[in-house]
Length: 167
Image 1 (tube, rainbow, N blue to C red):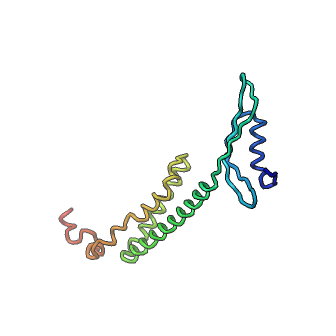
Image 2 (cartoon, helix red, strand yellow):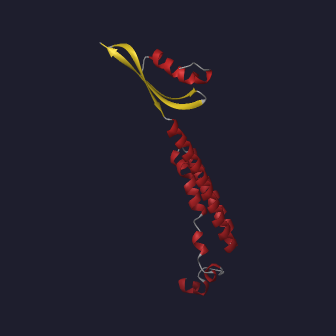
Image 3 (tube, rainbow, N blue to C red):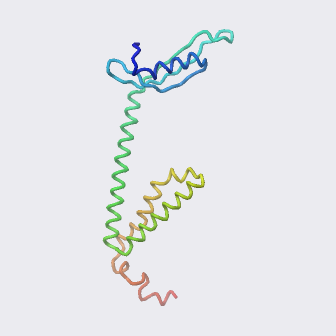
């Protein structure tokens, strides 16, 4: 193993294991012949009569797993982008069909965002975890209006002439 400056993280991991005299588990980069590998390094001590007499270091090459993880993260980002654009298209269709509904949807999203911000300010960590899907559901809550007949959607009141019967 050649000691290159770009492998400082790797060698520091080994030195930490020796000097801390404790089991160490690390994920580090190691560069060899122009290729960077991601290694899981586990170091533990051999003991004899309760005394530490040696150090055992196990290396696992996780390069392919890390590359797969990076690829999955990129695909997830692209998928999220596609879903965001889908939401934009659906909102555009709802607004085009029922222009009086446009401000309603945007207002609901503003209220939902403020609600989530308030929850986070109170220390609710779950609010941050559900933010994206929750806001997407608020954006899409009126998507059913795309299939409601215009005769129902465009009445001055949703009940039309039957409003008297309901009262």
